[in-house]
Image 1 (cartoon, rainbow, N blue to C red):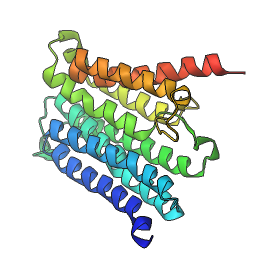
Image 2: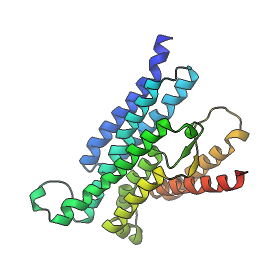
Image 3: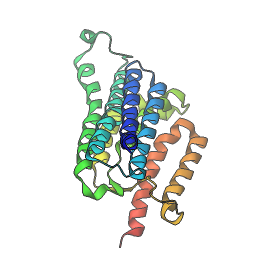
Length: 245
């Protein structure tokens, strides 16, 4: 029983460990590796709560630890990625010689960390918001992280000229940054992917979303990832409209 008590927290720490590795790769412009380690961290983030419920060892420590781990994996990492993308939009590949930057280049890339600030506020609010036990209010930080980390991969692998030009435009990137921070904290109810029972009827929406996500990935590859996040928000809005009493 004592071992079972610590299993969820160990899984949470693995999430944090993956986030730290992803952070290093993001600073080195290894966006694909950063993306994969964030995905692995999110995988651990999903299962720490699952095992906590299965072993009936939910605790306040686990709740706080989960948010702290998410802050790195789904908060700091996407902020660094957006910082790097904004640098690239000004023709700077990486931070080498800060003294050579002009004032615009010096200030604007750091605004990418607005994503990190938004994630921090969202995670702190999540811990005290009793409405978010079975669903979410605002886009969860892991979903937002996947959206942001997919952008440089779309830029690297997409042949769509319009898409590439948009992701190299600092105005578009700043708009995405502000929208990201807003959607994470907006009063938009979103369904949860956490499975608490194994009946089809109660998980039909989740199954539909997961099946659609597989199709998006097969059809669009990396571009499918931001499309999946957008579909998640749209599907939640429609679900709220049709289930509203």
